Image 1 (spheres, rainbow, N blue to C red):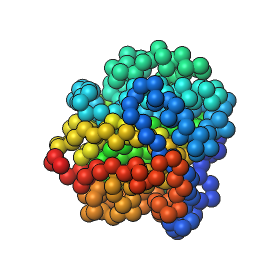
Image 2: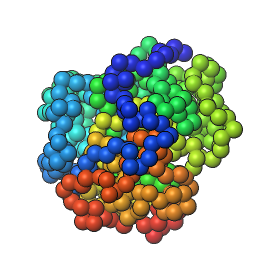
Image 3: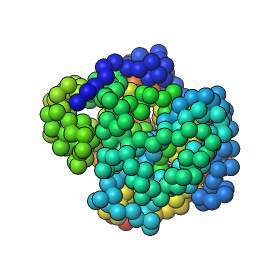
Image 4: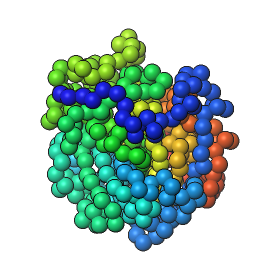
Length: 384
């Protein structure tokens, strides 16, 4: 197992700067804010790309962000297909049309290279593994700039892992060893769904980062030396803390901290957002589910809010998304939707990544009231 120590120049350049360095002393009033645009989109046909472009224009456009840059596009293809086959009646993964539309818009805005990334099983680089999710690989490869694909479930195409440090020291781990793609880029985009999450309450831009941890190092069968062909998911290491990462990989700050997934999952998510900042967040709420993040959650239901949301600050985006779902983004554990876990947005706000205060977030396009769509009591495990 080879690991590159230290943060790359690109990661340092993309860091959160002084706001994050304020650390745990940061308050809601000091956390950065950025506009969030909300739009109505009724399907994944020809209307999708124009609506998405209009929303991106409403937050200032993306030309200055991506022109002549390498852009990493992190997808949300959650769930191991070997265990959870595709369920078209439950649209909990990225719709193929959104991936193509985003790639097309990035290319039109002048991106030099797009690297599409996601972690999935098996941990191989075969293009047909992407196609099984319905992605039109050929169309995406022809959007107008160089396109690369990397499964970040292990070391992938690099000779070593890249170590990214959490700027404030970390909630759970001080640093994480990740596939090179997260640092070998100039711009990092999170493309996610508008959904509940069984543990975190909601899952949008930030929670999409939880899967950045490669199972080769953070999976249950990583062992003491790592495992480049992992078969086990992150539960023992990340969710419950019953296992540790391999030797040479940064270990937990406090092994005596709670082993509760509702404590650990939100904090590891925030650690990862701090270590690999999100430069652009796009959330698909056109056709989705409520009650959980996937088909494995009991009682999930399909619903069609017909919404798209975009923004440059992932905390602001997630806060607006949470409000649109009918919840208070400042709610604490025990209040819907945070029935099993702590509020990731508040944890991110406390370390200065962004604000969850709706009064400080500029909204473009639809108002929150116009966009609001009732997602019900959250991930409670029964139908509504």
